[in-house]
Length: 186
Image (cartoon, rainbow, N blue to C red; front, top):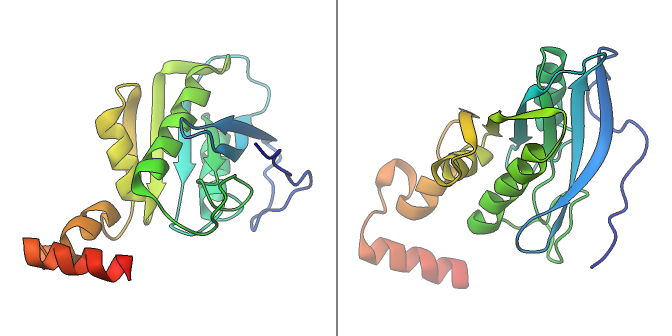
């Protein structure tokens, strides 16, 4: 396994909030892919905190929207992590800039694993935020993982459903699904 090379300086597209402590962290999903994340927590607290794992939009990195959401919610009392999904940003994965719904759902579950074992987290108050294309993956995770107590999606559509049935469910036939598989395989 390759050691991740994490940036040590503030590299976000948004300003740093002085009410929030920030640190880089890593964790590994069940596929053996090491994920890079930014952990945000309110400064000067010793209580166990509710926590959130944040990812998305599809193709984006934690230095963008997911990091801004995570930092903003940390300023409001949550311990949060914004993570780069597998194959994206500072996270591992040999093929770059691809998506895999099963692996990306597992990325969210690995984030929940990380949060549930953190001494500063109340494991009974873990939630997910999925932005844009990662909204559907957050919903997949919430359906599978009983440790997730709340899920918020900020999305125009459910990417997982569109992959299965097309926009507005217009490709919901065996013939349409076969054509989609042929196009993907080509």
